[in-house]
Length: 115
Image 1 (cartoon, rainbow, N blue to C red):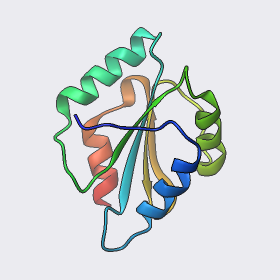
Image 2: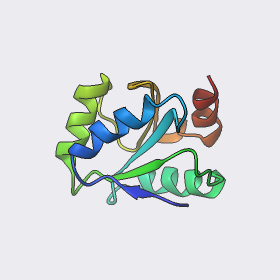
Image 3: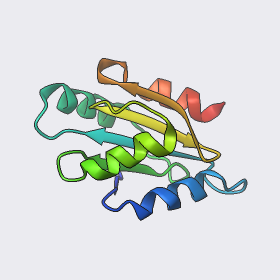
C-alpha cells in the first residue's frame, strides 16, 4: 500500500485543494490510526490487505499518537467526531464518508468515492 504520511496541518489545505480538482483525483482518503490500539491495528491490517493501489486516489496515513493536533483539526475542518481508528473520504473539499472501528471497509470507501 502506498501511504502518504500526514504530519503537518498545512497538508490538510492541500488535501482540500486536491479533492476539489475536477480533472485530477477528486477524492482523498485519510486513515487515522492509533499505534497502541489492537482494534486500530486490526482495522489497518484489514484495510491494507483489501486495498488495490490506484494512483488516482491519494491515501494519507495519520499516526494519532504523534499528531493529535492534526486529528483535532480534521474534526474541526470536516465536521466529524474524532474516532480511532477512522477512515475519511474527502471529496469537493468536504468529508463525504467516514467510518470507524470494524465499520472501516475498502468497499465502503470505494462506494463513497464513486458517488
